[in-house]
Image 1 (cartoon, helix red, strand yellow):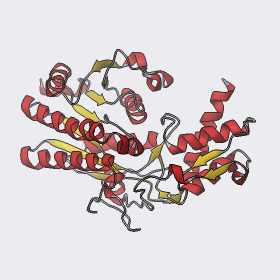
Image 2 (image 1 turned 90 degrees about the vertical axis):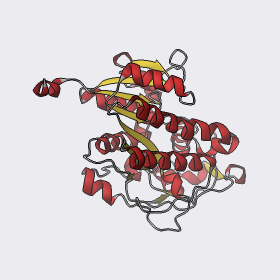
Image 3 (image 1 turned 180 degrees about the horizontal axis):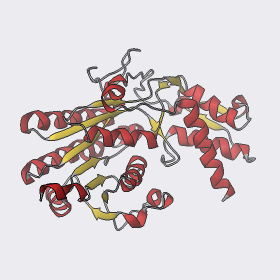
Image 4 (image 1 turned 180 degrees about the vertical axis):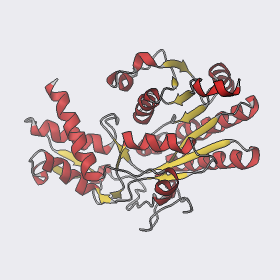
Length: 329
């Protein structure tokens, strides 16, 4: 039977399939020949608009799963018996986590722990990828964060992501699970929800270009981030699980820019003068905003052969191009 196994389709279970990363990952895995099973908190109620936008909605098996409920996790894993699990579920907004700290912690940290415990319990050789976050590093004081940089989380979201990261490392060391985290820095796309600042900026700028008289209000535009293109980042997730040994990776472009530069790039792409249309307001400042974020993704380049092709300027212009298309439709 051994030589036959090569042709058997691999199965991937994507938790949080309806989000930006989940949708692009599903699309990518389908092209790689995977059977893709996606889950969301309520598969009956979710609109799955991202999957529909990518025209892959009817090619994915959908399951409901409650990550906070161990029994629910166990049942889905036993039914699906995936080769690979991608945990991209849970609350995704740093800002929102200050308003809903408990929900954020439970959906991210407890959910990850339930997955790991269920995999251990079932004893199936499942490889699991967990969506870590650059937010775990907090303020690195201008030092470029790599896989060895200590965590100093500065939001309930970041605390939850840090806990999930250590759960993964713990199960890898204690039980030999193939468990990896990707510490992804900001990655954007047209599938980003409106509450993310990049989408907010792009959408407003496009409306202004089309004649809207609104003024775009932003918080601290001096913050510095490493912005990448989301469709590239999901390839890195997949490569992390194809390694011979499970390891964690920082995924980023390695280039840092101010939010003000992103805004300028967006308005320039539309031939607008940002000073006529943008103002900052203290109300939108976060309780503990991280000022500068820098990343060192050299390990991913060396070990995964992965390198970001698109930097902040490309990302801004690609998002504007996609947004303008929605006006034409």
